[in-house]
Image (cartoon, rainbow over all chains, first blue to last red; front, side, top):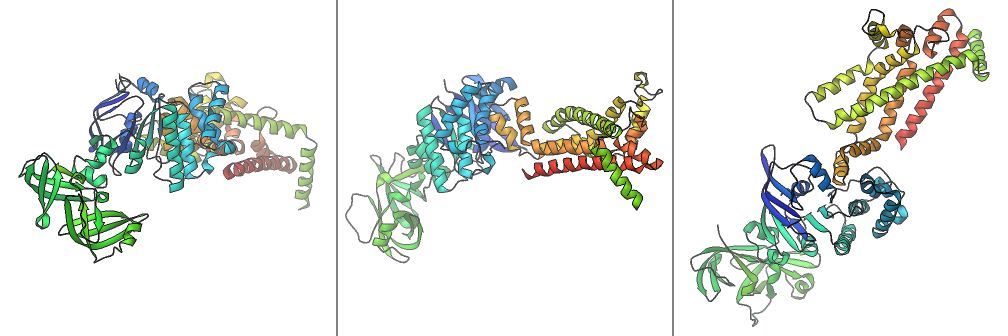
Length: 360
Length: 228
């Protein structure tokens, strides 16, 4: 029995569809990440799971029980969960009291509260400031207090909404480290929303892609990233190269696909000749060289660099090979190869580096 | 000019020597107004949270109405209480006219709108995410209201002090329903008004100084609160 299950969950605000037929199952102990662009409905879904609002239609089952049943049931179930929002909302009280409140509300004894809160304070590294008003904390510290406040109640489910979205990289890393620690130490079931795909991949065992209020694909993170099941997912998970084409031949699982500019790409697929498809090629699957080298890669194209953009340790190279191709290389190799606008290069990628999807 | 100076000196003397009459009037004024403020607070805090935390038709209108009564003239409240509690009124049987009790009732009616309105404003000043966060952390409805009250504590205390200030400084109501009976319902304001008209300005100034001192203390307390 899954710990959380939703059946045909729909939510509308002012007749506008926010969530459409969400069927989600989260097992006990699982870490599940909802990824999707801003405005996709991630927060609404988390709020529904925390039973803070009621769905327009559909059911939410928590530990096998229908949570939409009554207010009392929702209250009891909410006490078994904890929710950390994107913008950390701390109470105008001391850090200690902020963390202690969830326990006080559950009627725990003073001594027990003290032991638990002190333990958590050490974990979030804020013991020395426990008497300071929480409103004076920085964003990252406040988020750590918010997480501590949630986890101190030992929830069965921890819901995290973009826990690092508003933080600087250093604070974000600290918060993420804290979450990783919690996942390992408490074995809590976690449902988190993030628009940061790599964060989803780092923390979760399973991810669901939520776009326009629908979960379009769910599964193992690697699978979602390498084999997106639709164009939207592909675009969202960072597949920069999505090429339309038609299969011209298929032999033993190897297909040739005719794409724009009268070029052919070889890939692995069972689709038959004549099928209209689109190809997804992740930019990091493509290798650039200055001369035509021998390689086992089945696809080789000659192209001219149209744009070079450096992004931190990586460089994003755009090529015109008769069709547009985006390639990610390390900044270092871009410098070594002298990649710049107008230069001619060879782009190679393996047949297995191409993911094929049928056009709708 | 010298008369005023003499009055001032005498007034200070009355205060410093803890003149029985001055102390008695001051004590009674404080007891009546503090009681009225406490009663109004006991009524307005739950009522204010009820109005703030529930959605209902006419909520906006109700709040507007409450705010309209912020500046209701004290004599109008006096008139209302008079009509209700005089012998011919519906509550005449209680025989409360010209007693400290009726003064407390009158002051409760007088300050409740401003206290209620300011309590609602204080609640509204609390971030909407606070009650939601409390709910998500497992607070019951009552526990959530208590937390919001705690978040709004400074604004609520300021509202209570302001209401107390209005209660202790009003004169029309105290005169109309209290009757300014010496040793029974005479308070700061009624005493000042009577003694001044009698030409006994020393007592008036002494009482006035104490009243201003009380106002000063309230003001300092308010300022301290707002700085937090």
